[in-house]
Image (cartoon, rainbow, N blue to C red):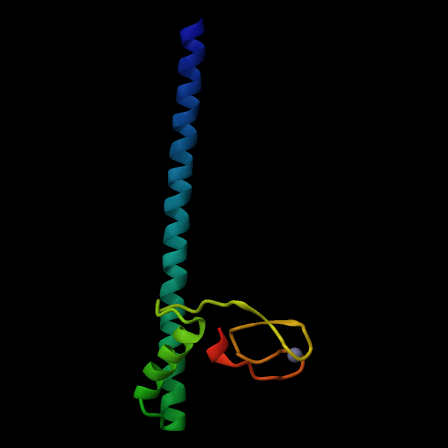
Length: 111
Ligand SMILES: [Zn+2]
């Protein structure tokens, strides 16, 4: 009786673990599908803008590097940090490097 009870618990845990694995794989596939779609959309948008505005393709790479370095760390990603505006004292993000409320441009060298 005691062993049966323990066995039942293990079986229950294994079933739960398999369910979590399945959910994890399913979630990963969904995220990959969404990432692929965002990548495709991003490329299409870039090509439309580049062709319409006759932009030099080097501008995209230069802007990507500039945005990547806004947080001072080269990691090929956008890190958003909260910045308190020295003028109005409200908090904006480093995404735009200017205060969302009063429009003050933040000094990038300070961060
Ligand atoms: Zn402000």
